Image (cartoon, rainbow, N blue to C red; front, side):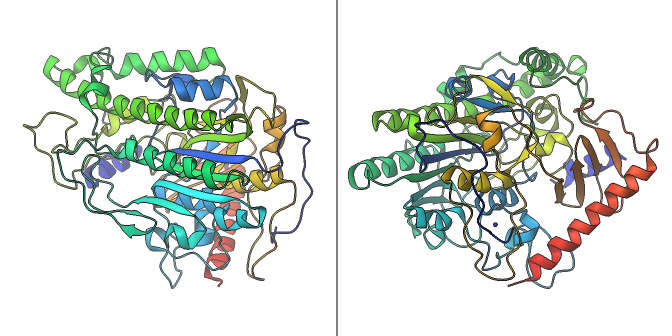
Length: 517
């Protein structure tokens, strides 16, 4: 069933905002209104970064980890637009119509419009004196300035990294970039973030800021500058089987995982079965994927250096995360793929496809769009020296994008904002502040997923997951089996019935909330 489902896929390719007291004591000199910087990668796998066992050179992300914390069980929604909704609102995407809600008589999913009560984080931060800046991918309904951002560089063209056509500054259209111009989207996103920070230092130094840097790397198409790709020529010659095992070994050595290796994705051949020519062709794709992440890390370094020059870095809560796992999609969009053009250039459209997505998500199962661990588990790196003393430490508490908003308001120490209407439900997330300050568990009842008919719920260490809305359920003990290789469903049918009923109850609840105004 899994092989058939995956083959078909590849071919087609807050509690009503009541006031709550802060739950944890911060460092004595921690600012109650820290600056906040969120770096969001696009389609970056669980183990791509060096500090998560990968072969890509990510010295700036690694430095954030060395001077802060790495979460080992941080979750997203499996797709870009629902993840952005969860990050910026604090709600599951179905609650705010930003992922598909079956049977609802209004648009949901990528075309869904949030209920009026589903306010974005910048508007929620305004009463606390924050200025907010957005740089990069948007993929949220509405426009940034109307949602509380003071400045925005908004990229709507996700098919061209050298010559985007649809991009906006402060919601006003910019001219298309002409091919041949020295332009790269990743650098342009960082340039805009630097512009905002410099203006803030000049004109608003007395105010805290929220800087949201939403990169499009390493989302397809695989476009990279030749000098970035050159660093990785031959780096992946050992092939996906050897490299997956090497990543797992490093992850285990670092204590990030204790599980074994998930099976090779169905349909992916053994590396040693490929011809020399095919091996060379496949290596190019991973070299480009690595080059895109490498360039993103370089640009993150530029933003961090700007914060340092403003004497703001240690007063800033910095978070790095990804919107979903690495993508196994195989498609061609935009201007098409010219096989005679140099790989990674503007006239090509390549993807890493299932074989390298399997590596990027090591040791987890499956990839973007799926709600098995490979699709929904990605890094979270947090640095804030003035807020907590932990350095180069791991946090194993299960956590989710829905936790970011309550964490920020717990840090502010004044409780979450008052509800904007009686229809507004409680925030489903939990503050991660206790885990930032010390290695404490985060008490929660459940985590829940639903995307493209893929379903899952996690309660404690048990996870129920299904590839299809009408397909069979699988049951895993994630404490012992993070790679989801030992299905317990047939041995524990009562638990399957219990958790599947719970999943359905939550869908019904979220559907009612999504229908409200």
